[in-house]
Image 1 (tube, rainbow, N blue to C red):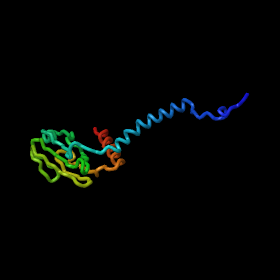
Image 2 (cartoon, rainbow, N blue to C red):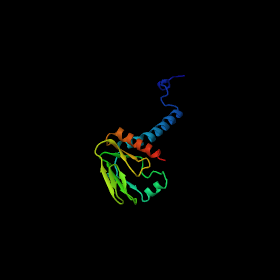
Image 3 (cartoon, rainbow, N blue to C red):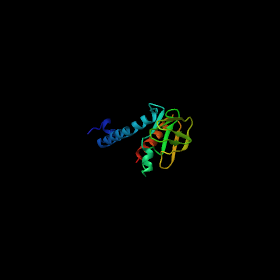
Image 4 (cartoon, helix red, strand yellow):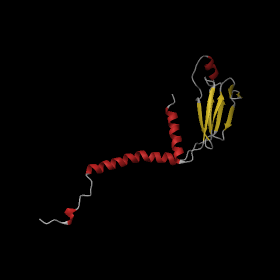
Length: 160
């Protein structure tokens, strides 16, 4: 029997099961990696620079009746340059205090924030009497955008 050069070469094609595993791994990795890249690269935008919170009508009466339900979140998160104006509207029948400001019924208060900071305000609309406003720096780099989006999603998931 005569041997040829083609018989001496090793088989360079992987077995079919290994090819399927590689293909499946590529699909799974792409399905995970693609949204992560988009979340990191997509700029953070909002329709408005203002974040509106309204104190609903009857809040003071419900509080005086012993109801402990929170009307406003205990923490408000804003972004410098993107969503950095806090708007509070008092739709209640009685005046409400927010920090040193007295909000009369129907009145709206606009507070712009220009620097990253944590701000504690006394607030009569809260059962605890206090509100924290966290102002974060604008996430300009991809990693910052991704981590900001993950933190926002985790805050949303942890809401009661």
